[in-house]
Image (cartoon, rainbow, N blue to C red; front, side):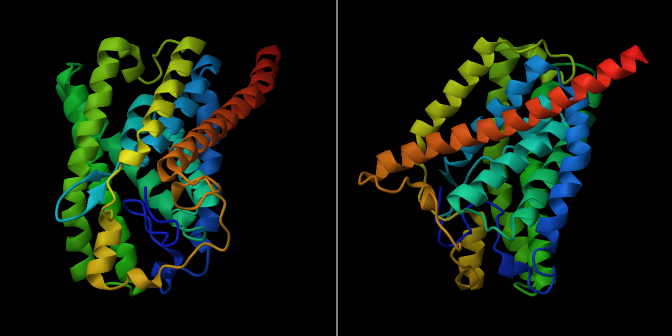
Length: 329
């Protein structure tokens, strides 16, 4: 968790001003959504069965909850789950991009986290780049392993670790191109701290994969998984809500990007959001800080679940008449 006033909370989120010489105002936010949504939605509707659709919502909710739990890293900094690797491994790259878009969209729009006009850049860095890296690395390691179980865990760790590092380096290059921080400073600073944060990402990902390997190993083979019954996805949603209950335990240390911004002297350029709904991950009107954080987390989990599930379900329903028409023809 972090500050809704700085818009610098998440590992590689950055505020719109950081792009001032690199992108014209909101161009990337405007072009990223159609760039992401059109091919991804088509593939999701074609690839996922109707009873697998709820798993998109469950996974999105779990990633949102996991991102609230910052863990201490080193030197007074913190990190948290990115989630792109886990989403890609379990649902495939197309669904994973939709999942990450839902998570980042709700964070920005409802919790004023990550910046509004920089949302497209955040989706590109944390969603698209993270997913592409994971897809390439994980598939390569699984192929090298020849179907042996170690490929799941080694591939999961390496893809998760590298997804964080490369996404952070892309952000550093954008900061350099914008003139916010020189490349010879931004790249080693962002890369160095996110090497450590990526280790946490890798361990969390491997832990989740190990649990699924013993409980539902079919979920680790995208396209071959058995349909998930109501009991499975309800249990998954309960787990996501349980993670949200632990959100007050999150580390209060600044995350990787905020730490770099403090060290390099550009933290002050962050601006407050033009409106506030649930700022700083605390539900307004609740005096108890821990309770306000827990309730905000629960609201976020349910919103993200609804968004991802709704998108996948709508696309699946739209595809049904088209499939029937092709069958009749």
